[in-house]
Image (cartoon, rainbow, N blue to C red):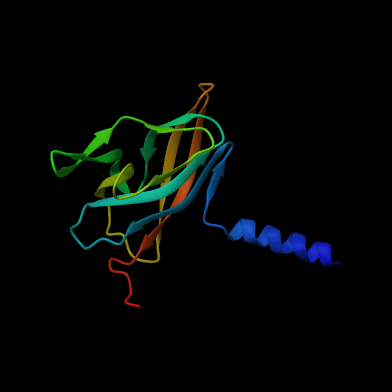
Length: 149
């Protein structure tokens, strides 16, 4: 009987996790900030792990007119953001998309992003063996300002 409860607890934990899984790809902690009225752009951050070498080759969301892949680089004493056509995913290594490296940009938002909502996003990934995988991700919209502790 105890094993049934353990299995049920494990199953519930898996179902309630905020990650997205597709074959060899695991996406965790996808988030963005709420936006103000009139703000038409938002950055998206997440962590991605692939069991085999892969490449993110596209991103889309019905919450914006376009979705792009970007990176930040420190050049000449300044940070510069620019669009990239792909993002490599090394085998068995976690890629943390954050403010100081790779991240996604939703441009031409169709409506302001409200804290507590989620934004649908689809990653198009090409695996090392050249087959394509689509990973649907629900991006958590966090408050514009973090609450004071």
